[in-house]
Amino acid sequence: MAGRFTPRPTRTTVRGGHVAVPRGVPRQAPAPARVRTWVPEWPLDLGLVLGPLRRGGGDPTFRALPDGSVWRASLTPAGPGTLRVTERGGEIRGEAWGPGADWLLDKLPEMLGAADDPAAFEPRHRLLAHTRHRRPGLRLMRTGLVLESLIPSILEQKVTTGEAYRAWRLLVRKYGEPAPGPAPERMSVMPAPRTWSLIPSWEWHRAGVDDKRASTVLRAVRVAARLEEAVGMPPEAARERLELVSGIGVWTSAETVQRSHGAADAVTVGDLHLPGIVGWALAGDRHADDSVMLSLLEPYAGQRHRAARLILLSGRVPGRRAPRMPYGDIGRL
Image (cartoon, rainbow, N blue to C red):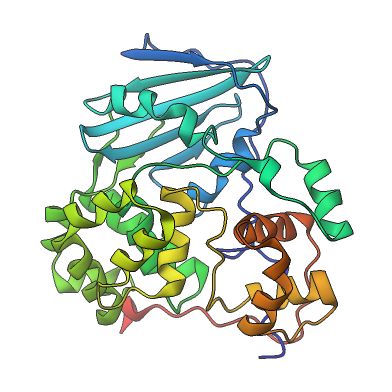
């Protein structure tokens, strides 16, 4: 375990969930089906806010383009939809297509952190204060969608990031439907719950997903409606409902509600890297475990996830002391 820390990207350390969104000349696109403009009263960094939604550079449901736009393809309660978000001069412009267009635009402010309250966080460590000062555009998003964060989180259980991202990419591209509107090439909406339930066992195997994770996804989609109802619950109650499904534990439920609910206190417990990163940043302890991490984050009760995000964004991580975990592909067996 001595070499479990590394500055390379992982599911929890992709610069704290930051996606680089270049600024440039807006891309010309066909007239959108729906448009909404919104002017937040605070600085907003699209890459910081929406970055945790991207599952790898080849994620079919997420794309950040050189023109500064961020595209998302989502399966909403109203149906599939594509959302393009841009920021110019402090104004946010959302353009949406498909049956879920109105739903996506209605949720746009919350998705960009309008329901978040960064003022509730009081830094008690110089590193956190410095990082917050350098990242004024950080807000915690709330997507209002459970399954689109739950399923990829299940795929990330106990495997390398590359394996999980590959599985998500292959399954969504094969069984999802093309994103509505003039979306970038090869963007797809994730499969509906019934479609997930009909994926043959050999296709899970080809995607590198073992039976345990595949079975957990299948159990989750069978009660998809009940899980989506958790959006209307407080984060802790939502986590309790998610964890009623066998195979969904505290790590998976936290990773889900961080995105679906914007849960500021849902710190990820059970992660391979995070305890040592937090321990190193706050106390110089690279061997910290979950109990030590929670003790160090106790002064930030109610805002522990935000504190962890700021630590990840600080770049202060211990160096790697052993070879990285080998990549395994059960699809070749």
